[in-house]
Length: 413
Ligand SMILES: Cc1ncc(C[n+]2csc(CCOP(=O)(O)OP(=O)(O)O)c2C)c(N)n1
Image (cartoon, rainbow, N blue to C red; front, side):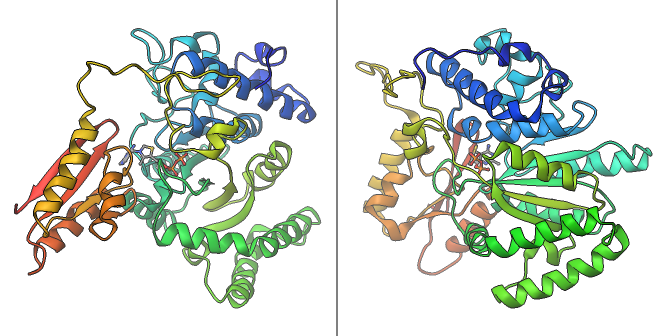
């Protein structure tokens, strides 16, 4: 953090149309000022921090390339959208974030026409955006673009797969942006995370292919009709090289990336290039949660929602809890360990909230008896039900975490 942040450029941006008037060369400066603004505001008025730092360049690029609010951006969860709020008419009001009568922490259509869907729930952006995209084509709004922004953690949720499944066969022009920082609140888990990691390793192939198709489009050699045949050819080549089929392209969803989600100028160029391509598309970005604030980059889980902190040193101001009751989640986490010690048939299951519900205590003490199953509440409950039906484990505990209140299910205790 610079000691004296200045917002010379940012203060000229009240709405995205002001941003769109800027020369693309100025975008890195805007990103810098936006990031400093988020850091400064959040240091004294706490909220979700690391996720919004990781989407600064994406936010600027989206509002620069797309004609918002006519074009629609759907944020998954919405905890990464502070930059979006600041650029869409709420810069002056941002200090009231999360305060009584102030602006809301997550996007909300009741607050702004730029907020296209009420956020909070993970994994629903693809479905919501697909609905908007299909409705737009049915209404003949050929020029209206719809973009869903989803994190790699939220991509592990069943609802995201339901959306992809539907997007693959229902005619639409949706763009899905996969914001892959390898983190949910804790580290991302599961096969999707591993799959995305493997895609990264074939990065060079993807970039070459993307550049080649851009040139072919520009030369008029590649058009929409030839595109599908070429994708299939490209897919076969890539699948052969990686000995693995691209899941998205296998579902007829054109895949681009992975590219650096912090290179705002390149990101803007890529968005321009793919904006008007027909059919569903996915753009895979690599980002760093907490980008631009060293302590948050290093410890993204702690800095997911860190409370107040010193914006220069990064020292967090821990509230004095003397005389206060313990946190609900800590009572839960410690009690779970006590119960598990007393009853060997108890296991813990959490849908991507090990630190949020303090099941990480059980995870560190009895790693074989605690499971993070990803952002997948329905699966968590049914998985626990499966345990409960075996002869070995008559009891299972699963935790549902919906934003702030952990809910405990004790089955067959
Ligand atoms: C259905 C549901 N389950 C759990 C949560 C709690 N939660 C909020 S953010 C988050 C992590 C999201 O990770 P990702 O999508 O990768 O976004 P990132 O934080 O990395 O930007 C979780 C689990 C939620 N909001 N909704």
